[in-house]
Length: 221
Image 1 (tube, rainbow, N blue to C red):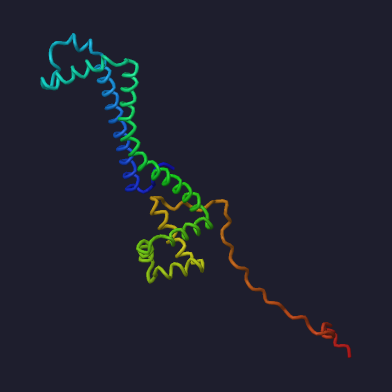
Image 2 (tube, helix red, strand yellow):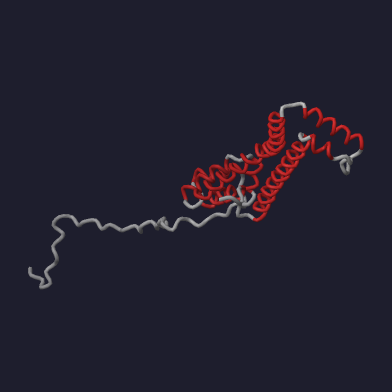
């Protein structure tokens, strides 16, 4: 499961993923342009043939660029290209890596938690575990869950979980699923529905010995 079922949570996730994609594409483009520009500066012969100044830059900047290329011309061209490639790669990896360090663990953690919660919610025992997980939430979140049940308090939710109150268990499990942006799935079809308790059978005490003979219908004396 990659995205939440709740529309608001899913929209938030899609926007976050789009921002990460655009950020990565932006710095990839900047790294490629920087590499090409640096390779151009590493070819001073091409600049020497170009007498006119570069467009969109002033004369002082143009002079500084040409002096830089003259200094690069005295260096080993292999080392220059390696340095340019490393610099362009660092320009891409540093900003993108910082973003991924913050975004990727949270994204993967949600995917793992949502998948586990979805599987647990498909069974009664699993929903009990979700209800327990909801009880471990901060008190303000637990109080919000209690407000959905008339007359309930955070303490009564804990008591209801211990007693196996179906209403309390369902409310707690639903709150945990809602926190993850999920909807409660139907229970597994393979589970047998709860059976009604058997009706009590009235037992007839046996008659004492000697009284089990049936009376003679002919009234023999």
